[in-house]
Length: 146
Image (tube, rainbow, N blue to C red; front, side, top):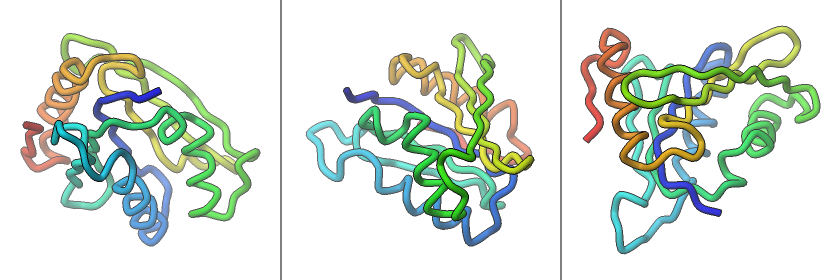
């Protein structure tokens, strides 16, 4: 199943090299070609490198919990079975977003945000991502999703 939407990855504990590897991996998600350009992976990083927003048409297995655990295992060497997730919800505008924090060995490493929820529409995700950036403008240096 394909989900066309916005993701945010916020680094909370990865070392710079691990963070750079994760960003490179997620920039490869989604189709490389599509009749609808909004379905092709587009990303924007925070200037401090601690966060990235991505919009694309993702395959479910690419962005589910197991997919992120496998990527984190590849990057950190910590086995997929050692990762623990904590899920929460937040609203940055008119919709609800799902937040999943990935932790291992007592350290939070990354929080993944499904803007507009994991079953939300592209438009709902765009609204949530825009409002997230506005609410966190200091960290994102005024970047605005288009």
